[in-house]
Amino acid sequence: MATSNRNDTDNPSSSGSAEIPRDFPNVPPSSPMIDHSFTLQAVMEMQRSIGQLTEAINQLGRSVDTLDNRTKSVEEEVSKVNTKLAIAAAILALLLVAGGYVIDKVWDSAWAFIAHQITNPPK
Image (cartoon, rainbow, N blue to C red):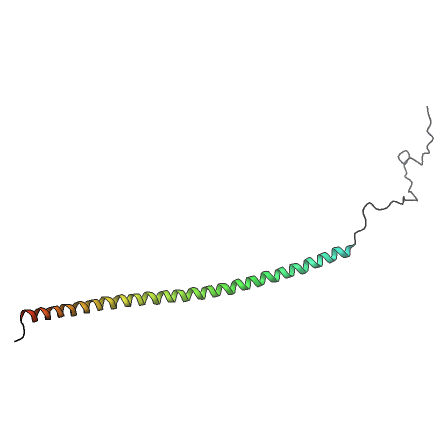
């Protein structure tokens, strides 16, 4: 049987106890260390931007409310003008009907007078 040149201390699996290494290899890290100040700066800038966006959205909401109130007041004014125009149109129609009736009666009376003058001339 061939014997190995290795010591039993080199192979921890061959014995029941493992030896703790005293030296660690000097290997550079696989990724460079990240500077957290850049990340913190980016987060602070995003927070400031989000605050500005939130304020802009709130301002838009207030503007929409103001515009809605203005629209409602304009709608009420237009409704009042429509009502007034309808009333004025009804009054004008009644005046035209009454005026037409009066003109018709005056016209009939004038023709009746003219016809009477023609048939019975004054002596």
